Amino acid sequence: MIFGKKPTTGNKQPRTQPDAARAGGTNRPQAARTPQPVLGANDPVPRDPGSSRLVHLWSDGLGTAGTRSLQVILVIVLAAAVVFAMTRLSLVILPLLLGVILACALWPLIRLLRRWLSPMLAAWIVLLGAFLILGGIVTGIVISVVSQWGTLSEKAQQGFSQVQGWLKDLPIQIDQNQLNEWIGKATEFLTSSQFGAGALSGLSAAGNFFVGAGTLLVTLFFFLKDGDTIWKFFMSWVPERVRPTWDRAGARARDVFGGYLRGTTIVAAVDAIGIGLVMVIIGVPLAFPLAILVFLGAYIPMVGAAVAGVLSVLVTLVSSGVWQALVVAIATVVIQQLEGNLLQPVVMGNTLHLHGLVILITLTGGSILGGIVGALISVPLVAAAWAIVKVFSGRETPDDDPAERKRRRKVRKLAKARAKALAS
Image 1: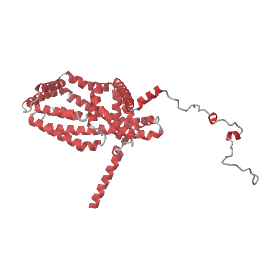
Image 2: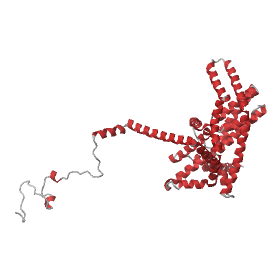
Image 3: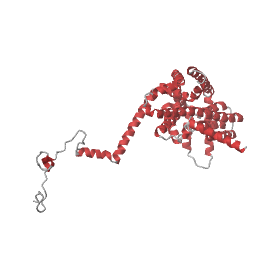
Image 4: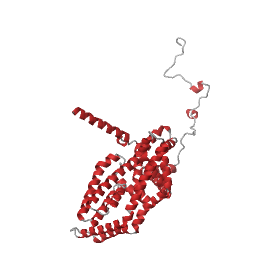
């Protein structure tokens, strides 16, 4: 022993007791001291092989595609159910939609009159004025077009026959049987009861409109008087954090409805006046009813104006001659190109920012569901829906905001004025 300590011999290490032994426990083997795992409430439950195979079946690419397909089918079924319900309730839905579109178109006038008048008085003035104007237009259309539709259809039939005779003399071989079948179908559609059924299928919706005229007038009046209050009521059910987005979406839909109706009316009036004046100058007997048809056709994008123009050319061909028909055809093409490239972008802006294929599909679906009235309102509805989608998906551009476009126009005008002032 050195300095009171017992020396250690060799490499023998000092014995150390386990922590448990020092704490008063027993020195048990490690396996005996390790507690067995116990499943808790939040621990994953072991899966059996069958469920694992089922999960793997739906987790690969084909399973994901199947899941998405089921979701798409569910959405389509839900949309079809909504459309079916709307067709069954057309007597209520159509006047309501027409009231919304008309209220959006008349809203700038309401906002102007509210500077000096109460909302009640402003709504009454605008409603009575719109009722008198629309009533006069409808009365003029009925008197001028419906009363002379027999003559128009007869002239169009003769024009088809004359064009058919010209096609026979062309050096290009044309299947005459197929051509006769096409012309026979067109003639039957224009002169027989089939056109009456087709037109009256749209006019039946218009008839429902007249039957529900009270609904239209009441809804239009309240939209004009309390439109902003009604919108605030709906927004009270929307969470506050997303309320600005919903407000912006509603404003875009309102701008689309109003801009589409106002812009289309201006474009239709320019087309009808221009083509009508040309037909009056060259002496076409049915110039006024044909001009009315051109005006109405402009409300159906891409298709209506072209069909009305062809009908005008055919009637002019029979009633006035080849050269007069050629003049009407050239005037129709020139006027429609000018308004489409110069006037329409100014009066409508980005209101109807839809691809041509989308417009054609929309017109087809709208005409199937609602006849002529369905074709008239389907395009602005889809355009408004697309504007709302752009708001919620974050795809808006500065050109989509009418206020921003107006501000940019003012800036450009000021820049031009300053440039002129500096140049002088």
